[in-house]
Length: 389
Image 1 (spheres, one colour):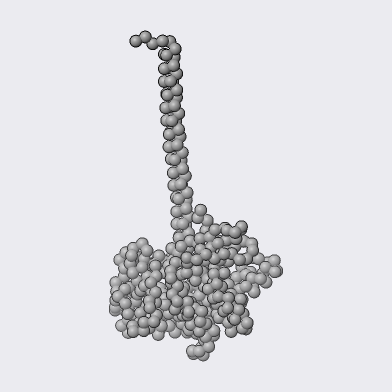
Image 2: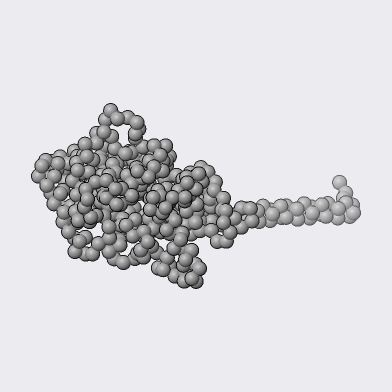
């Protein structure tokens, strides 16, 4: 067959166009593949950085879920707490401390806030006394242009924000039982409920999910709640006790003894030992003492040591009903209107770990260490929302 020159040139042109198209499509595929790979690497980097920031948050504040907030409706913040959304109502900068303050006010509700505000300060609910005293002091500091952090540190602020932080943590990480909420709102029952709330928040920070016991079941003496470690699955029972003292938390009953003269926590420990369960038991006793100098503080520790030694001699150590008993103290509510920050105002905790507990210590986790670490992490709430994006 004879191929004309014109036909040959046409064939060459078609082949050249086809080859160029192939090269173009191959180049496009390579470019798209490279772009996908770059996007994947960028996404991995973002996720790695986010995971690192979350690990840093956990290392600083424990295993409570990091606060979640976004800007909406202009510059107003929307904060997620316990399955609900709370919108910023005030103008200006809105921090995490502002959010937990507003959430705590929302917890009490407007009718109760208005009713309490009509009462003299010393007759109000203890938590609302702290809030009012803190706000009044804070406003004075702002008005005087003296906004140094230490100037505004009074006991009421520490007590109020620690309560608000614990309340936020439980609302955001566990179901706040109706009975606990009722007791927190009731001024006469607030002290015990406040301590239970603190222990629950501490347990969340230590890595436990919570299952509150049925408070209406009076047939047996059961602990406050059962905790399940999120990482190992071990289960523990937790009991909370708080020592009532005349004039503290508005309590006017009891012995006419100045708070701090004696610790007197023997009966609380014995009561905790009677709780029936088949799990390792961890007891938290709030000694509810004021701030003190070094000599007084040492005297209290010596009394606690002697009490635990006496109980051991009486048979409470072999076997011991509780795996660990923690004695703790936060004196801030005694210092409502006073500036804090001195060494004698500090929080403290003292654990007693049983050598021979009735229920063996968990083999997987050192629960005492988990709680001690969480206690250090919970001392001060975050000021701002963490940047996890």
